[in-house]
Length: 314
Image (cartoon, rainbow, N blue to C red; front, side, top):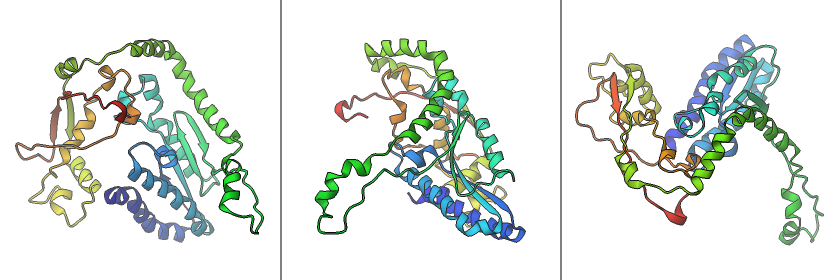
């Protein structure tokens, strides 16, 4: 949790603290913070990351109250960029819609003088963009007397929790209109996959014996240093953050990054597996020789075992 907060929360605060005096002096400036759809709607197994990204939203809403008088605008984007994981989960047509190129134009607009908004949260990606708003339910006004009891709240619970839903319908509708452009092209394929999954069995032995194609993971001194900063290294850790240090070396856990470039398609062996419910566990690294500060890893994946967790499965 501490590392996540340092990377996604404290670093954001530090950058803002440094740039704010410059913006105040020139009476103008734009700050764009980056949250995530996970920060808006959370996700399974990502409590620490979701909390940090939610805090980014709170920070963005608060900062304009202090900065707007100096001509400084602050906004936040929550994008749905693609990752190495989503590339193995979604069809290629959907992966193509998750490119950063479909986020950059909106960020460019937020930075331009023609954008007057500040303190806003925008969900963007896949050629869709829209402001995210907090919505209150209709609620109920209680009488301030002895009738205001836990029981009276219980009786009005449905009214307290129910909202019109119109706003949500508009947002979901717009997103689906964009995705259906591509989903429609693969609907027939999806129907065949669904029919196949209904009667599918898992061949564990075949999964164990399957030979995956090797993947190359090239890295440079810059990648090694960025990784070190990502795990909270500072200027005091000169041997892992400065390439010209006489004792410069790579932090031992750096090789875990190579795993994310293997691109293992679990659906090939687990036809009903939903990778959105994947919980990233632990890594084990066995080092046989010193890790260079630049080079190329050849990564070969292997399925060790598939365990049936029964009712305990996701």
